[in-house]
Length: 126
Image 1 (cartoon, rainbow, N blue to C red):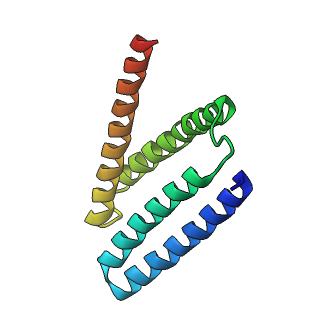
Image 2 (cartoon, rainbow, N blue to C red):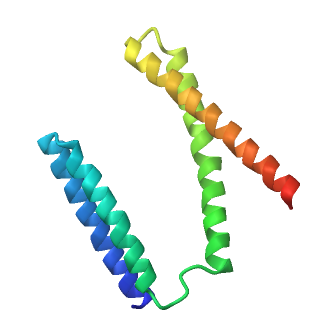
């Protein structure tokens, strides 16, 4: 199987998973979603094993690293700013919005701590 065929089949698999998630939410049956995710993971693995071409090389690894770093640099400051704004305006909103702001702040701090831990680990290793 070629890389192009793999991507097309993986996209179809993702669309099928989205449809299964839609049915699971609509019918309020969580087990449908769990089974669909497990089936999609197994099928994706089998598709990857059937691919004859090289799927990952140094270029794709570098692109993935740059995308991950850019995502952290963009999303974390926006999430932190949103949580600060929500906390500053908490008198105007309900208690649920305040709770969301605290959860968002906690999530940003946790992601930064995990990032710092991995950075320290890899800095010592290399």
